[in-house]
Image 1: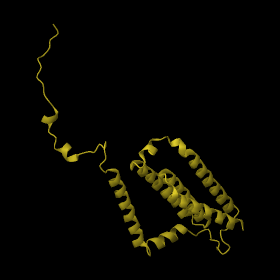
Image 2: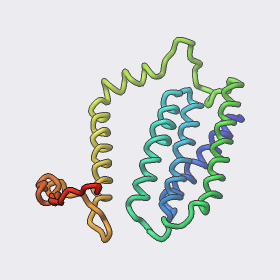
Image 3: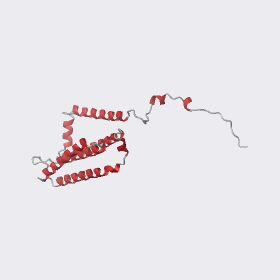
Image 4: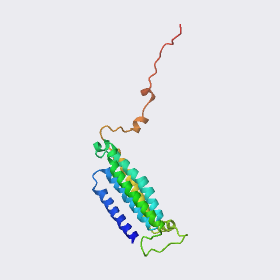
Length: 200
């Protein structure tokens, strides 16, 4: 019963965080809500005994993709006046989200330490069971084309982010490779003949 209540609490937090991602007008708040949504999803995976998915979600998405999103948001010059303001105004929201994440993890580890399954119909696994091996067997056989397609979409997203940051705008200092290669030494260096000085 307690695990079921915890599941509904996590589901409510996940829905609220997903709504915050869409509704938030500030892109930094949107990224913070997305971090909360990913961590809450990871806790749900952890309670369902899919530890590999939970760790991968935290390490890959929260640790790498969210940092990339935050840098892209900063580089896109969205609301430049807002970006130039102090980051201390994001501290209350960040602290509240960190408190929620810490509470979720503490509750998840407490439930797992008491061996309380997420659902009553979940069969216990033996010690030799590896969900990582099962996931890899399914991912690289039945869903290999979808996996490769997802990789191509992520590559396209990275290239698009780079193109958006390199767009023409006032004050942008761009590098002209062809002009640098075409430079001659005679155009940059001037040799001056000066008479020798003697110490007399």
